[in-house]
Length: 223
Image 1: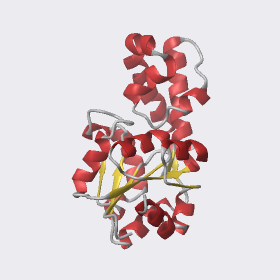
Image 2 (image 1 turned 30 degrees about the vertical axis):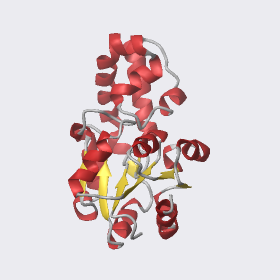
Image 3 (image 1 turned 135 degrees about the vertical axis):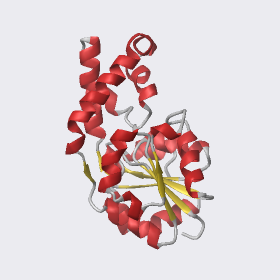
């Protein structure tokens, strides 16, 4: 662990069980704006990238140009209706506490709009269990651009960091800055997907990572 001073945690899909809520909200938004169904599976493979990129990635540049803002507005309203159903994954808070006890800084790198970040930050007891956090307002560019990670590290004065995330977009953003990523499967991405993207180790969920924390950080430190 001594080779790192900071652990950067993604929130949605990593600590908070929310990826499928987001996918359903986007699906409803596309249907309301475009009057056609966009497969939820296609949307899910893009969850974790910024909403400013997701519309084009899922439905094409023409849809983004003509309807992107409208789709995002509908998605926000749809997610507002289900956000209270989202819950932390088992032992998410305990994982943050364990990292802090190990003498490492804990920073939460959320790209959510501020009002959507409020619930997970409250559930995680972020003021007690982390050193700081970001929201989507802290960066002009969204994942897989690494700007949000840069801002997260700047908030805590982090030097050498390891990323914990659930999506290939987390891994790509971290790779761009030479930061190793520990992947979690609880967001719905596959083990091989995360490894192929460059994750140095993959665990099932926060509880599994907590049980193997020394091993995971040791593996990351050797990369």
